[in-house]
Length: 399
Image (tube, rainbow, N blue to C red):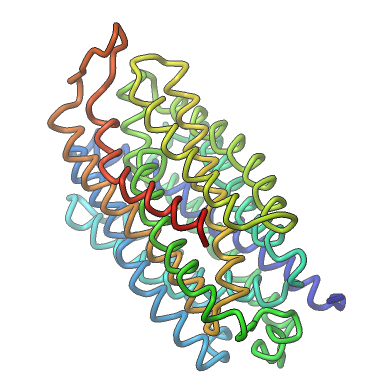
C-alpha cells in the first residue's frame, strides 16, 4: 500500500512525538529516583513502588483507552491534552516532600500516559503498510530508545542543578510533544482509521480463530519477559546499577544510555526479521536473550553485568514492536490488542520491580558459589518465572 504525502508526514510526526514523550519521561526518572533515595532516604522497594505506581496506572488506562479508540476513533483528537497535562504534573514534583506524594504523582502520570501512548501506537500501526509494519513500529520504538539514550546523557550533565531546574526541562519537552501531536492529527484530519486498517491488510478476520492462541501466548510471554528484565528499567535501574558497580550518578546514566542504544540497534534487526521471516522465531529469540541476561547479571563480574544489561535491553526493546505487529495484523480490535501487550508488559515490569526491590533490600550482598563462580541471589531470583517462559517458547514453536 503506497502512502500519500500527508500520511507520511503524520507518521513522521507521530514518531517524533514518541521521541519527545520518551525523552521527557525518562529524563524525569533519574531525577525523581535519586531525589527519593538521597534526599528523602527511601528504601529500594519504595523506589520500585514509584515506578510500579506509574506502570500499573498506565496498564489499566491503556486497556480503557484502547477499547475507546476501537469504538470511538474520534477519541484520538484529544490525546494532545494528555501531553500538556503531563507537563504540569512533572512540575508538581517540586512541591512534594515525602515519598507518598511522589507515588501519587507517578500514578497520575501513569493514567495520562495510558490515555495517550497506546492510541499513538495504534495510529502508527494503522497508517503503516502491512509489509513494513514491523519495521515502522520498530522505528517508533527506536525513536523512544534514542530518547532514553539522550535523556541519560542530559541527566549526566544536569544532575547537579537545583531540583526545580532539572524538572523544568522535561516539563517543557512535554509541551513540545503536545504541539507535535496536534500537528500530526491536523495532517490526517477526517481519516477513517477503520478503513485505513482494512486497506492496509490489517483486519484479517479469516486468521483470527487460528491465531488467537498465538496472540494470547505472546501476551503471556511479554509479562514474563518484562518481569525478568525489570532491573534495566525505571527508577530502580539507576539505584541498582549505581550501587552494584559502585559508580556515581553521571556514570550510571551513561552506562544505561549506552546499553540502551546498543539494544535498539539490534532490536531493529529483530523487527526486520519479523517482517521478512517469522514473528514466532523472533519472539522466541527475545525470550532467550532475556533468560541469558539474568544469568549474566547474576555473575559477580563487571563485564558480564554490563553484557547482561545490554541483552536485557535488546530483549525488551525488540519484543514490543514484534508482538504489536502480530496483534495489529491478527486482532479484530487492533487498538485493544496493542493495549493488551502494553498492559501485560507493564504489569510484568511492575510485579518484577516489587519482587526484585524486596529481594534486593533483603539479600543485596548475598551470594552463592557454584564451581568457583560467585552468583548474586537478588538478580538470580528473577528466574522464578523461568517455567512460564519455557512454556511460552514451546507453545510458539508448535503454533
